[in-house]
Length: 345
Image (cartoon, rainbow, N blue to C red):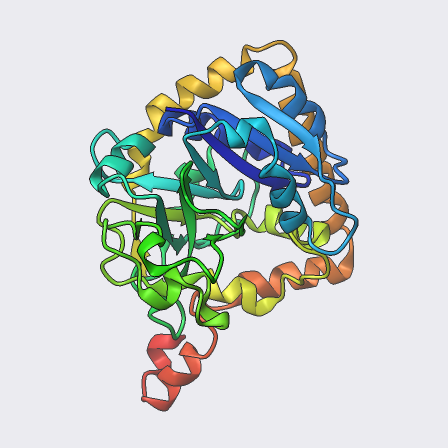
């Protein structure tokens, strides 16, 4: 089975080896990376990973929407057109497969071999981690929101595995799309992470504001998507300075941090992958030039952290974020109205 992972990156050098190694453990055979405006050595490190199936291309976008332009290009690349399955995800997202041997083929089998599988996000909190460490992200952050809930909604975003015979019109960042004119009899077989048929309005993208989400309750029997959007506070500062990899002009504001820093739940299930992950990272580091380029990207990351923290406004913002309660926006106020203000503090 050929499985191709497609992603966009900008200044993600310190995190590449973990992500590539982890996805190799899942059964990913090929990688298509698009990079833009990197100054931490991300591009050079990706080129050095070519021997393990990494294809690195410059992002073709001319401003506007980096990810959608890249996905449009990806749909024409042989590594994608020749794949049995395509997995579109970001470098801070880790598919946590609970079925069988914890691989993508096991997930596909558990879901009944549909033409698409949409897996619900699970946002992992910063958890008070301040300092960047050159160590697996999945080992550092084990607390998240209640998996069935995110802020005030019971619906949550997804990322999607797409089979070769999906009646594709185009790839979206969160899900594929097929033509509105496609007869119902030819609609693809599409499941959630529990192997259940996705809701009809999601399938046909009938609700513009919910085209990439559906209720998460009960949707994680076979897989969940661990999303480490915050990581350490140090790395979050670099992320905010860098801007969004996927689209121009997006701001990582206070609400972005608070929404994803809910520590209500502990989930350590992904830690089962750590022994094999360490072995695969070591294998990648043994490739010519890879260890040196990874270490240089770590140095660049730490230098950027130092530069940012030396700026009074950034230092003040970091202190403010660190002091915020680990509650979604509005929850502390709700607790106060319910007479639970002491608990909120």
